[in-house]
Length: 456
Image 1 (cartoon, rainbow, N blue to C red):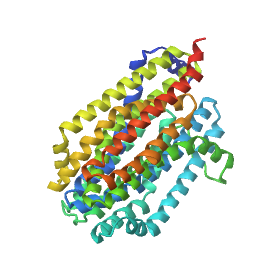
Image 2 (cartoon, helix red, strand yellow):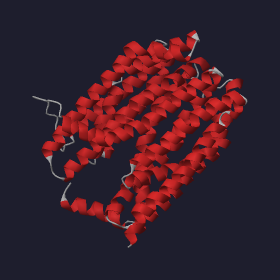
Image 3 (cartoon, rainbow, N blue to C red):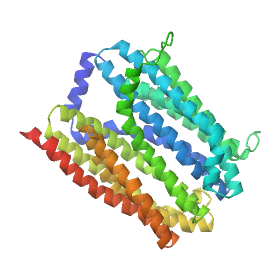
Image 4 (tube, rainbow, N blue to C red):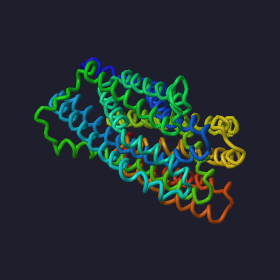
């Protein structure tokens, strides 16, 4: 980036009205994250028309797929942060070292999930269900997704390289092409259209991994041909412990934070499967629809981190205050609209998944009750962004631990023992509410420690 471009970027972060700045910075991230959410939603949408058990199988597989994304995105966050800093320092040697060590770590990450796909998929499903049909379909689907997960891992890494050098448009193109391929070929391979054999959940898995591999290939091609800031020099390559340590110093908290969501999905599935396989299918529908509501708010969260961090460095308390205010307003508006849509469109949403009468009954309760927590979620997301911007990722981790490990899973287990199935969903509202109150206390603490003194 040239000196002029740097100055313009700094002026924008320092002078553009915060509300406008936050919206313009968040919008590309929102679109990018929504495309990421498409894969699992599309799979589930078509698979639900095979059978309710097929949808349940994919829901049980979801935590492992989420873990792949969590570990890779966390590693990508570390690569992104280190690479951006080195580009600012004009350290080309460091940029190249970070790039090739990032590829090396991505390869190791893939090997980890390859091993899971080859040896642990069957024990994973055997532990969760005794239903032979759910077991069979789950093993078929997840085995393919894990064995060929190099596409998922690779596309995330190469897209992060594009994003860290400012080529977000190219990153979005690779995501969009992969998502469109998946949308087109899911029904073709699942139901056997236009001359292809009917493959069921196996077809869903193949369409997913092919979409990811195509997205990876396009992102890699863009990096090689369009991204002149990074170079892939593997001759005489040796892993650099210092570079790897620097990547994970930033990325490890993000990995832990993201992986807790995978733990949450696994824990909820494990509790619900003992109540009803249909309850698992209902949660599967909810969690996928939730992604489309939450992803725009996550984009706002990322925008808050960038703007608040810049203005903290610039010691501009007024703009930090404005960032917090507008972040809560925008994220809150998005999620309140999401709540209203969940309440009003519950039946049409469930019909998209070909819900049976039983699934319609359980799913309606799940969608309507859990979505009542969205106001709390908006507050928590923005507060976690402020913690990270002010250099205290530990607070963010504490909130996630509290929400998932300390409150949600134990409360869900207790509610499942004490109440009827329709009432267990209130555990989500309880967890989000307590987390938001705790988050507000932590925000007040860090605000008085780090932001308030800036006015002096």
